[in-house]
Length: 432
View 1: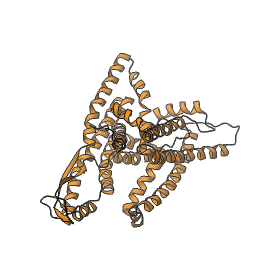
View 2 (view 1 turned 90 degrees about the horizontal axis):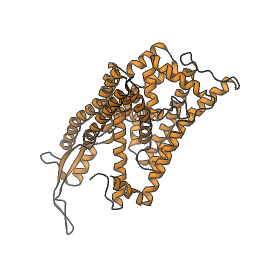
View 3 (view 1 turned 135 degrees about the vertical axis):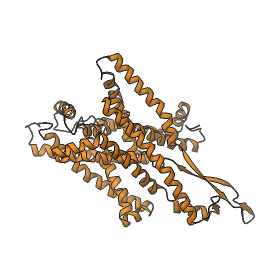
């Protein structure tokens, strides 16, 4: 892998893309520590830590802080993180199956995708505005008790804070799109990846100091890291697992040449949706926490905490992940189109008639392999959450199922894109 990475830097175009991606991610991390103007930084950091340890909505706010890479606990310009954009993307994905016009846009090629992207951007800014106002009201409430300076009128401070937070969301969205267009990998996924990874060092330090006996803390931390390392190969195996449907092509004469006569296969991934189901499920589950931040109602805070941890969270996580696994797989893979392409090219699946029978066969295979794929993601997500619920070890939370699946999934996706770029220049890729 090291030699492949060195080869990647030997290609000038690829080197520029890698350095550009790293520069944008570094800029994102700087913004996570740049406080919003008018915020008493030290007072807010103390209030955030003390309140979340004692309040009903503390767990949900802590998880939201994890996905922002600590930006929320710093009340930085990137406090809203990438969540408004992901929520807007989920809404637009759902609208494609509900509103026929949006569904037609998705099939119109580049023009339709551009229109969907534009609406997603506007929706992101709207959701960002709602979240910004909610956080402002929440942190000014008696629950957190943050008091702003009287040197500037409160209404002006409030406008500056809300505008800064919404501008930060727009800037994150712009950076993510820049990485996707000019860098390596999916920009939004990489931003989530770097947010989670940035919390790991502090989680390791917290795990070591969790018990009074530092030796015991070090032993527990090492054990957790070893278990995580042991799970990574199994997760990678499942991420790359495929169900291969054989396809035969009949021989035919075209002019003076003999065409076809070859055997190939359709590779159907067991986890075709990747990390999308767990990201979407996390956004849905922690949406009540965002509502609690907006309205700051006692029962809503209790409900947000209930769906953020405990048995209700575990059940919802499994159900939503399996649902989004099926939903997103149906969005990215079209059995009818695949069947039609096979028929037009003179191919057939052995033992299956071309046409509708082939379509139904591919659909049934996809249904059968999507269920174990979705359950696999759900188990990886829920088991660490259960362990964290009973131990309180933040390292388990940082390396929890949601985090580790996102990290591994994004890393594999980025390496696959680098792999294709390297092979274009006749270099050996990462995957041997």
